Length: 107
Ligand SMILES: [Zn+2]
View 1 (cartoon, rainbow, N blue to C red):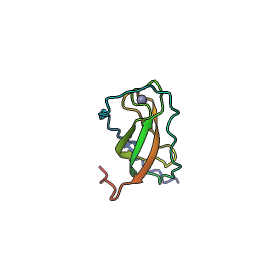
View 2 (cartoon, rainbow, N blue to C red; view 1 turned 90 degrees about the vertical axis):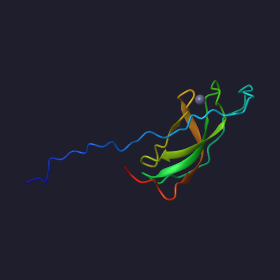
View 3 (tube, rainbow, N blue to C red; view 1 turned 135 degrees about the vertical axis):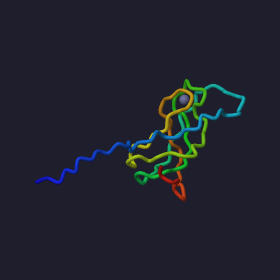
View 4 (cartoon, rainbow, N blue to C red; view 1 turned 120 degrees about the vertical axis):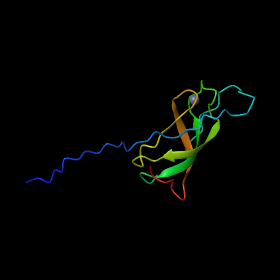
């Protein structure tokens, strides 16, 4: 006999990354001709919350290369850590990350 107990998980394990789309007060948009900022190599622990900084890597975006603080970011499985730009909705480059301590309470 199998031990199927008939219960199914009803919660998703991938809350979306929390990205604060707060506009940058810098009044000078400037031309976006510089190469995109490069991320630091960083190893995420899986299923943890981090704070991070990121920058949009889309050079047509007003937020291109503008470093933004991300107060809370979930690491998912630890390798699929993605932040999307709040302006152009494309993938942003994670520049740095720090494990939140303490971790926020689970809901
Ligand atoms: Zn963008």
